[in-house]
Amino acid sequence: MIRESYIERKSCAIAKAAGWLVYKFTSPNQKGVPDRVFVRAGRVVFAEFKAPGKQATPLQVRQIEKLREQGMDVYVIDSVEDARNTFEG
Image (cartoon, rainbow, N blue to C red; front, side, top):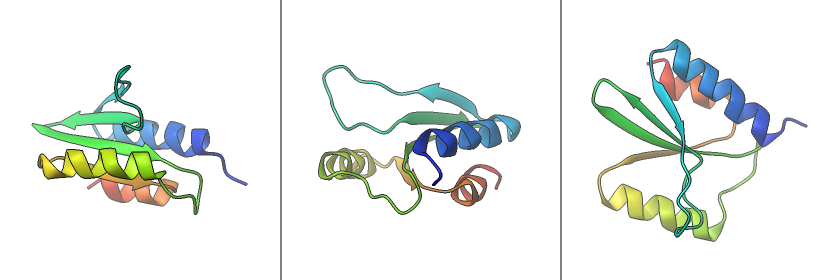
């Protein structure tokens, strides 16, 4: 079984190779925020990583919805292919 940490590590490597800045995102007063922030050419993308087939928790879904309501791009990535589609284009 592929672990979430593997997907996250590979995704970050793909993004960096494509010229994205990659930051770990933590917010001490807000639980459930996405795992990473990616920045390239004026674009900011948030990503929550999951093991293949796993879903975001209800709290994570609420945080993702809040970010999307503010016009942010937020992805739940559960495969290396998802990462390629998100960051190589």
